[in-house]
Image (cartoon, rainbow, N blue to C red; front, side, top):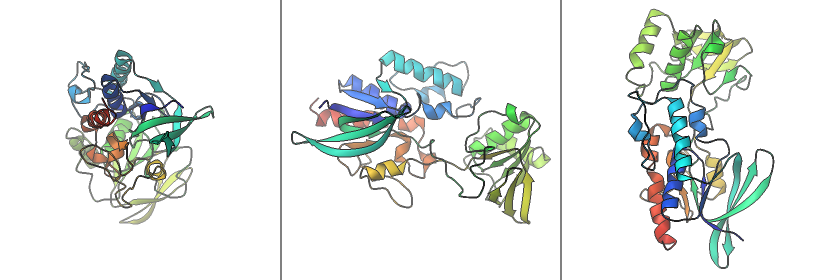
Length: 331
């Protein structure tokens, strides 16, 4: 049986940083990724600009060069491809982890990681340690309402152009919703923003807040505060707000209500997760969970509090994890 030192689940920035550290410490590693390279960043809005400056997105000491103060999504995609090529990282794409179990190999505990490719091929990989760098962007927070699965409804915003002269409802009150509403408005859509609270979220980017507030004030973007969506039909979004029930005509609907990590995979692997916060039980210094040699990195650490973990801080988790493993495995 072939047993690697470490198997890394997820090819986002934190998974890549973990792999770089493993390679630098001469650990036998592989990354398995159910989608494509930095899959979450690829699914960000097409013209998204990062909140942070380029050096705070860098991993492996490789500079992210941009002529702008803040890098764009396209530049980040180009940068992380260069990271993989520069370090020659081993990644198996389109291979989803379905289970993580512990076995014995000649008296030593190892993990048996079962995966399935997008073509239906199943295999079992073995490793002495596993790092879950699975992020949280793959799992939206569903509202659990009728019509949420209709074809014109999405939990991801990409581009405004298809919605030119269309009526669009954006649900949410944080950065994603505010930026989507603004871009849709400037792309010629008729936009209504629906938010369950009385005001927009405090975490909205400082240059976005006055823009969206002014557009709402002048009526360019309509808004319904203290309102919740109760149903979506093929032609309308039905909300319940201060004025009672209202139907908002809509050809497009974006439910930008946040995302969460895949705690089901963690729980099946034996990781204890807080039932309220979904935060995994772990050592805050080493990121090792209650399952020995099973670690979490990046957004997987956050639970429901996804606003606490970004590329800027999650990129350092893998270095600490590999330092622990290198000592443990006899480096």
